[in-house]
Image 1 (cartoon, one colour):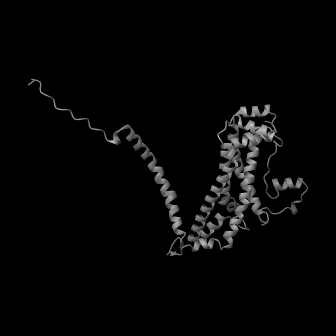
Image 2 (cartoon, rainbow, N blue to C red):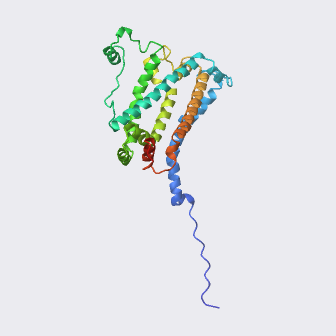
Length: 311
């Protein structure tokens, strides 16, 4: 027998726990940083939303007993004239949102390149002030001009105009940023092909900013369905200017019909969701040729040549 004794096998080193590894430390940091935002999101968004949905099935006030009424509040939405009228008023703001997007896109374009009417500016309107003064210069008499906020045949259009003026600048800045990011070589190629401004806009600018355009339209239409501040501050919802949100606010805080107001909020959320999906599908169809994967450096030029009758 050899004098040297056989040494026993050394045990394998213990594998460190997952939370002590580098990967575990990374996961721990991610969880800790996400915990507070997720908690705040749940407490101030999802929990109140779930509570509101449950309230929509009750006949209740802020204080006192509540009575379960099932779908009665949702049915009442379609039977109350003030709610139906408020939904109709939203059409004014939806029409205004289309004008708002068009004006914002137009002014963004004229600030990015020289086109006709590039020095055109928009005027404010107030009875006896800027807008009425301009109309008087055009030959209108102040006595024959309507009361922009009292006449029910025009007051909603007046409020829609304020909404257009308020948000057009924001959309215009977004459009300018998107237009300025377009590759300048595309404009040079278009100039070599003898393209006019409309062809540059249609075949270069519009396909290039389609993401920002779709986003702005979705936000504008969704905002039109939930207009509150302008008519509430200017007219208080009087003279037939009460939007869906104003009627909902009156029912909840003045008439104490919390259940009905909650049902209106859920109903409005469903409308906005449906409109948003419909808009995305519509623009996906409209811009289907802009996402075919062809070379973006030559695609606009090919389209322009086709429009001009070239090969």
